[in-house]
Image (cartoon, rainbow, N blue to C red; front, side):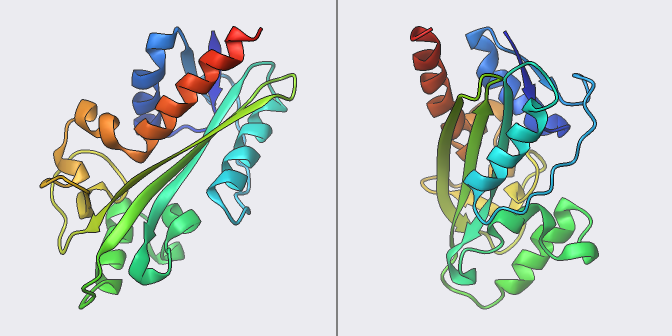
Length: 198
């Protein structure tokens, strides 16, 4: 089965391929599928944004399209950066490092470091059906970045029950506990149910 990921993020693609390939799913990035689209993420929730992206791709190809919207929600910042995680700091923050350094500055002197990664995955089928799953990974914001792996805010996030940052884990360890890994496990179960009814 060929599915299209409504993204060209190579790290996200590799992460999702590793989890979905045992189901016999060949996951292509949108560029591999010949798509060149940029959907405006103007939703106010992760659910809205993931659906917008999946629909945008599915309108152009005759294949199931998967999109995720994910981000970091920090309790002391009222849930920010949230759906704006990839755009945190606006034009002045052009890299993951810029964004997590801004986050650390905004958290200076804050004792409540609780946070969670959230991921919502939406798959839209050409017939209009859809599957939605949500995964969360609770933890806390570290005082300084640690580790070279992962991407995004991984170097400054320590998952609950762990001594290491997300960036200090290998891909298998991260996938087992990450918000995206948890959302994908739920997605896999829902996908099996979906095809069992066909």
